[in-house]
Length: 504
Image (cartoon, rainbow, N blue to C red; front, side):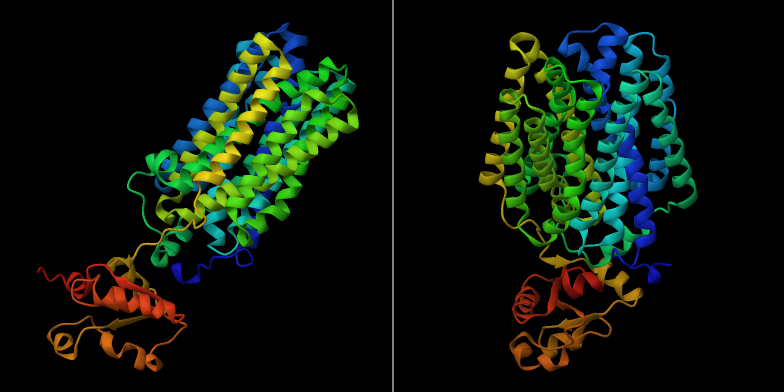
């Protein structure tokens, strides 16, 4: 089974396409609420407090964040597909609860379920796509994933606003959620396959250094991971404000539901389409620069919101917000994937998404309190300043080089690769006398001093594993020399003695 598994977008296009379609349905569940909930709160429940209205985003953000984390923790144990299925099951009752809600607490409960469902479904599709494509096209894969999700957010946000304007704020807009959740569940049951085998295959040759503590490193210590994590948190912090306060600001300017739907839909739609380009860009260009400029553009756009009133001006602001977010969103995930070991990737992405989606709750709380105390415009300006500060942190703290490779490859990984007929060439760089005493079966003996004169014995299509006695001395030097000469080379952790279980 393992021998027929191949990483790549082209090699796995059928399964990848199914996951893209499913993620569009995942995004649609959020889009159902994107335009209409603030007005729903005022009309159906008489809630005027900005903090109270934004409480649904707080509930959504906290539960989605926590579910993201546990999805990452449990992905290897229960399988990605099973978690995806459970997420869709949780989504089924949400539109029915919103249609029949008689008190605001039912809306809060529906958004708790929505947060849990989104954490399971979106996280699972993200990790599964990364599993399928391997190293080469991760940015493109994430661009396609996020495009599908956020284009659907924008499309359904527009549709729900249009339906609300024509037929009323409830129940008709929520019928979209019934259709979306049923289709998402059916597609998952019929067509989605688990991708754990792809992780196992990639782990054979991947040499990304393992993290000592995934949560601590992703949150605080690792400069790449923690910088990306803070930017993700701030990105969703401002998105939480835009979700909750932007429609309120537009209502204060006397825009109707349909116009609000158009303006608010531009942002996630541009965000979605933009990622078709920016996802691939993150495979080619500096991830650090893309994150810096993306956060900076968002921050500047947000600062201008209180000063614009015309429809076309607000549409431009929404477009700039979409472009800035498109620059960072696929780049977040491809940077995390590049900086982590395959076995730890799901947990690291889960940790990142924990903090990123807590940004919804933090943004809603900060925006709501500030808006109630000082006014909506002050809240918007504050969030804009925080977003610009995040871009400065990226510029100062994030290193240019993302991937940290182990200096050596483990014995078990090499043995497994050989069992699976991988192209491996083991070169023992000790002297002939040492080689005769003991050596790894089928290893070629080329002393370190002779290595550069016998390159004709090596094949550049193979992964070269250099070994010595205990590893780290001559084998480390040999691997360094070969890398400089264009070979794919690593030295063996523990050397010949570890391979042969010789204790010295």
